Length: 129
Image (cartoon, rainbow, N blue to C red; front, side, top):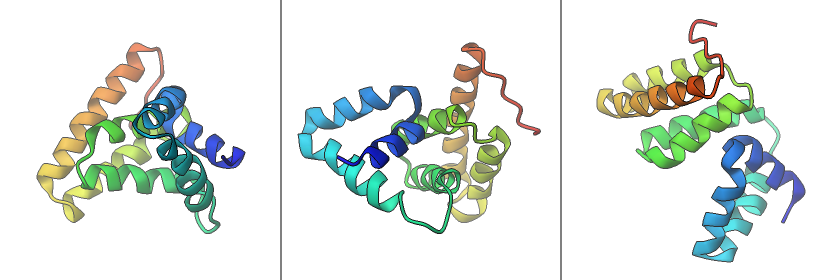
């Protein structure tokens, strides 16, 4: 396991990263290692775009392929990592054009729930900034 990969995964997945890793490992120990070593170690470790940009790519890809559970995890992780709520919101809104209205609508419903959850936890969310 690469330390860098585990750190990137923790930042992307937020406070529940250990629980999510344990869930992968419960399916098969190799799954957790692949996440840390390949996905977050090699792929997310490449140069060219920042981790914040990679997080936005992952968020829109998960939304476009309609994976709401994983999308929810990454949305929480992005907020916890300090990515602007407005950037996330705008990326999801752009999906109307490229992934279709129903897909964007589904993603925005998940986003609305994540924002509400974060606000209940005392996180200040500003969709205008």
